[in-house]
Image 1 (cartoon, rainbow, N blue to C red):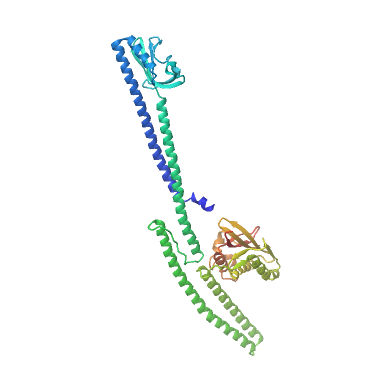
Image 2 (cartoon, rainbow, N blue to C red):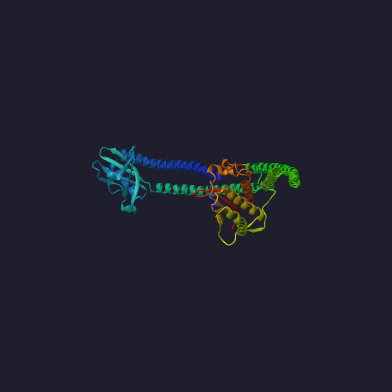
Length: 475
């Protein structure tokens, strides 16, 4: 359904619709012009017959007199053709013709050039009793004689109606073909865009071996696919180089740091065995302990940076091993519940459902949840309860399991939440607390490896809700 809705939002479909509307407008105007010209041609042809008939009658009256004219009009009317005749004297009395009476003025429609249109019942001699639409003219033969000559315009109207139906059917066929073509073009374009989008989604999750493969050659979409493949190849090389440099730096620095830590440990042991006054020995021991602690922090930061680099570079792929998130949450809760209780608070655990199985790395997911709980302990208010909740969420692109950690601390302003998940970012209120600003970045990277993400939101009335999402795929 999501892709069906997006079909009508594609530029290909909209462009095809715009072209279809313009094409139909031009075609409709052309057909309308043809219809109007055909109507005028039929009308002119019929009017020419009336003028021809009027010329014959006028010449006959002028050369052979009234009696011959009456006989001619009577014979014409009795012939049963499509022409209507009405010969009248100066007072309007009927002398001859197949029209029983002259139409009343309110029953006629007169044009500016004296053509009249009206409906009349015909004389029974024509074997017609229905009203007939006619168009004609009144010809004045002399002061005491006038002749109405009109023609049946029903066949003309029938032809025009047939033509209008043909043109309407043609327009309907064009509309249907145009819509079908628009949908076809949009589906074809959307299918290719979906291929690119799915490939980019894989690349965003660190699978840099993914390549965009499109059918056809030489169009703008295949050119875009080629550029994306070149870009992916370049990014893969850069990420590999960066990962190699990171690994080398981490290895080169961790070795001397571990050696230095060992030397400090030995020094602390030797000081404890030497004959030095108590106060001086205690001060030196505290300094060595603090130095060892600082080195441990550096080693932890290097390990975190190395893990984050490997996650973001795609070196760590999502495992196909099934992991029950309900059990993971239960194990983490059991581990951290005594720690939370030591602060005078309580860890409230809520799991919706008996099981929540996904494919992934149990160790990474556990590390992400632990990082969120560590942040809640570090930044949450002392003595305030911490919430840990697992829930299932149905989304258009699949099923997700959300693991939410709630605290009642000062929280993070909405404007700073996105920035708080960047590497080495530490917001102003937390700068006095220990940390490297890499924890949320690591959680987000773990979530992305598992097809999800990390969302920070407010916890009413105060505090922060950190929600880790893990994809369970299409279910």
